[in-house]
Amino acid sequence: MIQKLAEKIKKTHAPICVGLDPMLKFIPEHILQKAFSECGETLEGAAEAVWQYNKAIIDAVYDLIPSVKPQIAMYEQFGIEGLRVFQKTIDYCHSKDLLVIGDIKRGDIGSTSAAYAVGHLGRVTVGSHAYAPFDEDFATVNPYLGTDGIQPFIDVCKEEKKGIFVLVKTSNPSGGEFQDRCSDGRPLYEWVGEKVAEWGETHMGETYSYVGAVVGATYPEMGKVLRNIMPKSFILVPGYGAQGGKGSDLAHFFNADGLGAVVNSSRGIIAAYQQEKYREFGSSNFADASRAAVIDMIRDIDQALGTAN
Image (tube, rainbow, N blue to C red; front, side, top):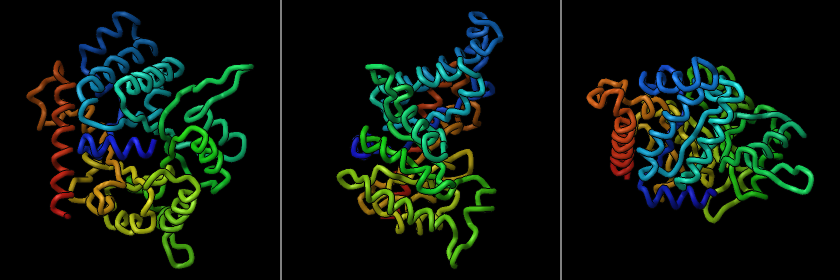
């Protein structure tokens, strides 16, 4: 899958990922009202609205991008109905030949970590049959429990030719409370980055490892350091757009081949119609606004990388 991601980025000239992180406040009123009229103001109704919203955005942007990143919490908040839509969204994205990064941020040890890995990336055996429950192509993983929490994911990834993105330096402001703490003279995120590179050597694709890293766009100088520490790891870069990251911050996240990073934007794309820049589209054309935001993001990153080169 890591090779497919690299090839799709080269084909689309779009090293980006659309974060499918739906919230009811993002969903246009006409979609909400239709869903509520069919299902009531219920968890099922909310989930139906999310599904129709997701589907319209996917239809509008799938030809421009290589990947999407649904954040599972935005679906779990609606219980089982939400998880059904999470699954439907993954399946629909696959039908459009999009790679799916499951933003699940799981991290545990032993059989628990193995169950997470099987549930999201692998296959679970039921009697004489094997099933792929969610079947994402990649998943985000929390490394706080060390190798015990990561190895079960790597084992499943080797079987399925899938990948993970390990949290290294996250985009949120308080991430530094732990990640920036010095240990033996170096910040913790550097030690984690070295471990990602080490884990990655055990599961390599043609050029890049199946073990990637999450490094926020809001910390470009740290991204430069981590790019050097993890030369063979793809970096998933959150924090673009709504969190303050911009194209000019991103050059150091990429390698000289123009690959090595995929930049995520969530509400900056899926709720673009609510921004002043795209307000002319209106809520009835929200998906067209999302497409315009994707095109602008591609241009911004392309210009930044061209300037850097």
